[in-house]
Length: 166
Image: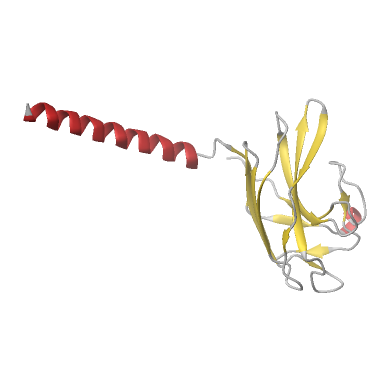
């Protein structure tokens, strides 16, 4: 009888380990991510004040960024961190909130989904955006834009750089 108990406990323990391993692989395996990026490109040059190929207006002046990274998963969890996102002529960030837009290609065209505003340091331009958005399905070729809505309409200041596929 004691032998069966040990065998049962060992079996349950082994199944628990297999289940835990499966859960962590699924969570960290990247299969749930639509996009992950470790750098961002600020708006400059001819993009300043122009509408880009995703239908989003660029900021009215060149911006620079020290660093930017983030990810978006299939459930619409958006996580973006920017550091030093500032207007070049001012040498500072004049806007108190940043937002992110996830831009998706769908069979029906481009769909842009915006997060609410998150605090941004003035004048430093640092912000962390963590939000959940309702993404279209499918969401192909996603791009992430960080910007603000100082006049009620979103304008972008920096965009995600695509990760190289190995």
